[in-house]
Length: 180
Image (tube, rainbow, N blue to C red; front, side, top):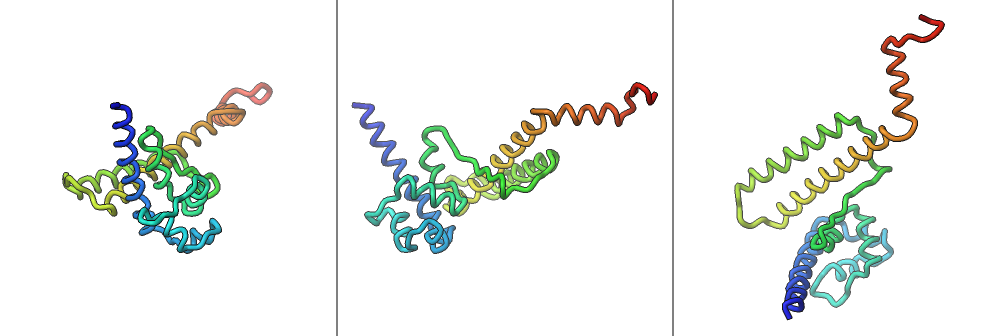
């Protein structure tokens, strides 16, 4: 019996959280542009994101909307109770940065999160706007860290590290037979 009660509580809590995220998504994104990109009328998209309407998003529509908007909050709200979050990882749209630049960018995100926490001053309740801003900053930080890790992995696998080490070895005065 307790399992059924727990599932009902989870369902109600999850539905309420998803409804809130849908509201924030509608308020922060341009519904007309997104609807046109996913092949849906703007009115239908607004209705599907409105819990008061009978229309419901399908999983494929949810993915298309997320891809078109670049906003992962709808999917994140659904996956959060499973202990999973998504990370925006767009290789094409992300410019090459040095490891130092990525590390410094992460410091900027951390500082921004700390500043937002100080500004809120221990408030018990957050407005939707503050909550979404905090989440967006944290997601940008996580995305930056994923890019940093990927860059590190790419720089330390394959032939490239050996070539770099070889060039460094020769450039730093290694004895070369016949030239020394």
